[in-house]
Image 1 (cartoon, rainbow, N blue to C red):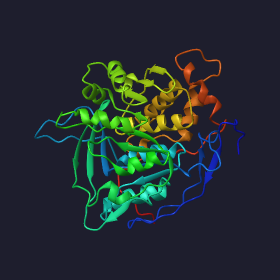
Image 2: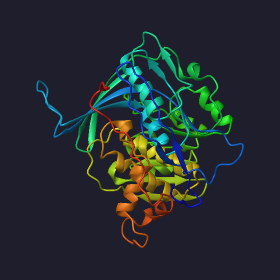
Image 3: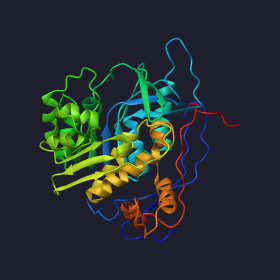
Length: 384
């Protein structure tokens, strides 16, 4: 076991086995994980770090397309991957970064639901105690076509048999919760906040383009809001991401506006900080879920009480690592990938463009860590 600085700790998770009806998964080697919150954990703190709730989709991602196939034609994609999607992107990314993560969602009793449930619970070690399986309800499915640094998605699904409030009831005590901002009040979020949890929220794209002032009012129940630039500008009625952040910061303590490969801009009213951090230039093959990975990393940095710029840099790095793989949630990096990047790219005396990332050199160990599992093109292969 390597020696670590005082602000980091390593936890060793034992091998897991699970069955999904198609195969018996081979026994995994123990996964070594850094606990970035070790310096802030205190006796009596909630065991759960983050409780998140929302929709989980079965994602099928096609990558490597030069262009979208024109109508009436057929395109062949060099790459393909399947993975749990939707809020699973956020949950997997947070768990791989060491947070004790609970996820509440509806799952169908079909093959898609089996795959998503088993992948999240057995492979990724996410607690699904607050989730429910529903007989006769098929899981939502999304097909994503990745072209260059962008993607288009098509989704099919039906409303959940129960609302999240009905599924969850009272959530467990947690350091934080993550929710999608909606026009309707979510009682589980209110309960979590009243129990002491920080509330992180993002926003789904409004197909009607009727961005409501009531949505802005919902920000008053949040501690941090993480929209992308288009969402932030539409919601704030501005035409600039920085101006949008300033307008939204009038309603919520922390605002982070993501700008894809151009990085992110953030304002933290609690500390008086603002930060503008450029993105890392990488060869991207699939941006699916990159925004969720960014958000998960920002949650880690916030709970670890890092400076705003360090939170943004860490989130930028995790998102940049994720777009170099396909498969949405299973593209999220673990500490093995982060440690490898630090050793390959950082020098403690570096004064170049990556100098601001030097704080990570004090967090990761001097040895290689086990990499995470990636998305495959099939639901599962039978092992004989």
